[in-house]
Image 1 (cartoon, rainbow, N blue to C red):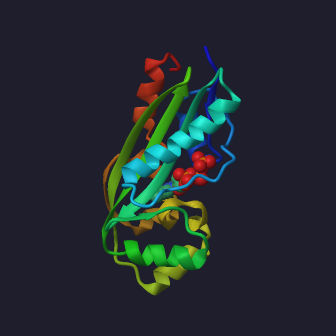
Image 2 (image 1 turned 120 degrees about the vertical axis):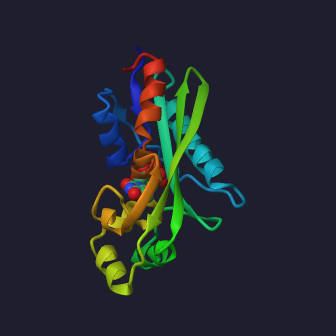
Image 3 (image 1 turned 90 degrees about the vertical axis):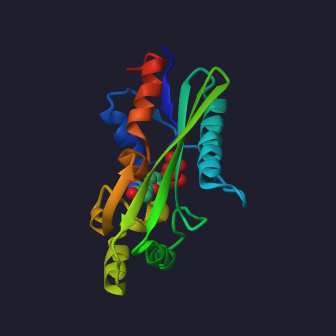
Length: 187
Ligand SMILES: Cc1cn([C@H]2C[C@H](O)[C@@H](COP(=O)(O)OP(=O)(O)OP(=O)(O)O)O2)c(=O)[nH]c1=O
């Protein structure tokens, strides 16, 4: 069987894949991926996941390569990872008291073929005041996360309700990935 490579530097994705009992190696894509203007969030995560898988697959043509990307979407705006804590605070203000959607795209490259799918969830935040926002940004947890929060960490206290695929919010849709890998004989 081919080696499985996770085209990611994300510790969450590695952990989720490890939880599935799937042996793999992580090799992050090196290029800075880009969202083009006018793309829907679903298109954006599909494209970005594909870019990551393609780049790593070019280096390891004999492996099965899995890339993923996560964004938060609210009122037609796509939120990626915050550039700094001020932007993290501004993202949290946008999410406060509202429902947003989190999308994770997954691309699996094998034998020059690409299988791409998207999973997601609707997440409703409690109303946050400035004290909540400065407390949470000061923890540093938002720094490397799309939408400036991590539902699996302290960010859990911001969330009133979630409907959909929880693991897609964390960064890798476990059930869909498991099924895709099972189909290919990896589990
Ligand atoms: C909304 C949300 C995002 N996130 C994370 C998942 C992703 O790691 C990150 C989104 O950034 P991505 O650009 O999808 O991924 P990455 O740069 O961290 O890793 P790589 O490109 O190497 O695979 O936000 C959480 O951990 N919890 C959450 O609740």
